[in-house]
View (cartoon, one colour):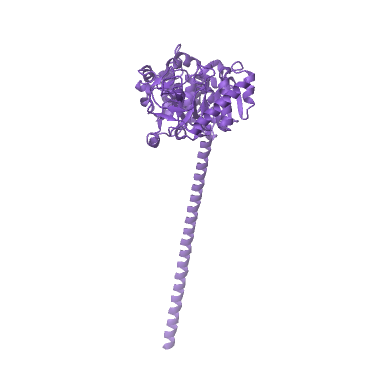
Length: 518
């Protein structure tokens, strides 16, 4: 009996052990299966993450390539992101140009689009139509911005690709109509900012034989008194504009080059002369960031510091306000309203709009970052083209001065003005009323400190050949005595610092020494 029980128990134990072992092995297999599935899943997740990271890295690299190769990167300037600058600057926040889309092309190709094409691709027979020109400038900008990232990526030939060649043909047609003088130096406007010999920053001056004496002193002052090594390019119209002797003088100064504008701009169209060469010289220069300065401009600090200005860094363009002269000027406002369908935040703050001054901008110094503001520069050049300047622009402006900010308005390009009207630097009662500062026009920096002046070193270059200006005081104000170049207000007269007086004395001594050599 006991034996049978023992055998039964043994059989039960064996069966139980077998079942337990089977269950354990089955569980182990299931666990291994689940573990394998988990490992496979995790591996797949890792692979997907790796692929996604790779895609992200490729996209970042693609965007970097596009960004590095973009011809123009216009800054995003808004009312909100410029609030901190409003105390020191007028920041011109434009209305953005509408983006080019496929629907735009379909509209142009439609029956009603014939009217649009008539506006885009025709030129008035006699007098340029600035309302039409504004439309053309803005459509050109929209097309350029459409193609810029595509061309920058370098994968598609937009001239032949079936999705783009028709739109490219419209772009080229409009470019040729607006800027025929770009060729043959550039194949298209996309090539302007990608010169093989480009330099980052530099100074541009426009000098003919008539401005040589002023420019010679100014260049020497930049090198020897301000101790600046910035490269300088001096543009002239042709061989008859600046003599070989005067060109050789400049070319013998380290890091100074003379350049004939007709090597870069097709002068058969522009027929440049006088002030009109200035924006074209910016365009033709090898510099990405340009300080354009007149031949009779002098400054108190290194020109390198101008590029550190906050308004310039924010917008890519820094302009300076002229003296307040000849109020009740209604023509400027009427003209702006005749061709600008919308405009920046600056326009209604301008003295032109308020009719309080015939003059708005002083173009003795202009700063531009061409990669940021190329559209504004091209539009400014257009306003200084032969037909436009003779028949329209210069009839509303004293030469090139107002064409800079107005060109930027026409192309909806942001810019900045230091919030300081033209001041005066000189001496008390120097050839003017007692106790008033009389001299040359001075421009202050964003901290209200003397920055630069134009008119040269003479008290009045148009009256006296050997009478130098004084360097004792400067004054702010808007009540100018035009004939004597004095500011009548006396409540904002400031004595120059010892450093500023020293700079003035060194400049006069240098100019006298130079005059002995010529």
